[in-house]
Length: 338
Length: 278
Image 1 (cartoon, rainbow over the protein chains, first blue to last red):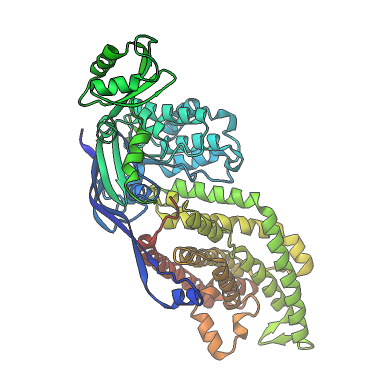
Image 2 (image 1 turned 180 degrees about the horizontal axis):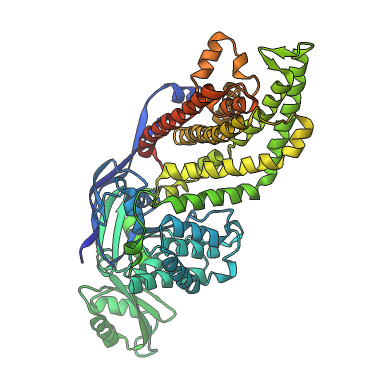
């Protein structure tokens, strides 16, 4: 697949007037012309292929949204190269706009005072959809997202979940090739989140829409994305498969074992296992439940089960996979608070 | 599969339906918030009342001053105030400023239509709705102020043309104020100052022909007179024939000049866009 998004050394610096504290601070702020520079995005490289579903992860203030805004053409980069669908988004903004859809979870693109259907009609005109195309897409989205009950209500009266569905319809109405989702599930309840994920997956599968997603809800990532780009302080920390990310940053699995009552008495099992040199580390033994951590890349689950079973027969067991949350904690943990 | 792109209309007029839709939506919104218009219209009617008293007192026993009879003066004041009000709507600027402050401006910037034309469409929609309100309010205005027939049938025709051009100039001036929102995080002060200055130089309180020497020269070289003074002066017969046509030409020049300035300002504003928040 050819890349639809290509970023090389992409950089965005913001300049803000330096603010002074203390007495006369405001006056000093006004009369001096000193600036502070923030490097929101500081040399980012990545490509996205057509039809991919990529998660863009990073703590607050990492530069995710700034990157998305540059890809949409809203912000002009300070430096570097950025190409979307073969055009430079900010220079050729109107052409770029034709092929992208955007959902910002924190703000709505719908017109507050107008009924939802008016917003959609407006978008149909803005994206120059022929009437038949508009009708067809509208009918499909209305059905998929179940917006009929509130289609004629002013947007300001909608609940967050309803508004979000309206925003999704608005973003997909013109059949964009790329869909940018910036924290789309923020504030939604569990049902609404699932609905949002199903919809995005379906658009990706049926329309071949390329999706770039930023989120703090790691379930979004685990259910939707194969590929993850982790960004922090404006730089790419990791770019690759979600599975590899877990293997690299959370290489351990945990065997949770319910041990048989015989022959090793409870309380001494941890010690027995430790001295026998099983290929893992016993973390705890509580109420007959034993936890053993092992490195998935070196030791297979079968080996560790066999080794434990040989010393202390197992009654029941589960193997706990690390979740993305652990990975992210490890990744972000090395740095100070954002 | 995306199929829309191939069947989409192209060409220089491709976005006209979109702008028409924006104009319609803005009119609809203005109608939703009509109480606001009623309130400001009330202020204007009071202003017409006060100005009429003041000018009647100033005229005293003199029937005609500077070649203008009192009745014509009162007609001028009534029309100028009403029209000045109709083209001075700040809601679009406030709306835009709020969008910039909240970062929702991003959506206007990522449409496949130009940002400036979108704002112009908003301003046109607002001006059209305000003009409609003004027409509806005419009976009330007639009781408090002075309404009368145009100076001649020709004056009426030229007035209509000039009124449209005046709305055009006012829209472009409002656009400048709207664009200033990209540089300042505060806009209310700017809007109040602009409103006062533009009303004064548009001849809403005092017709331009009464301005003393230097002030008059200044006023004639500013775009504000083209918004209100020109059409109203044509209506009441201050500007006639060739003078009227020349004045309309000046209006058109102002629209062109301001459009160029807007283009220039926008190319700078574009690089300044900071989208607030996450």
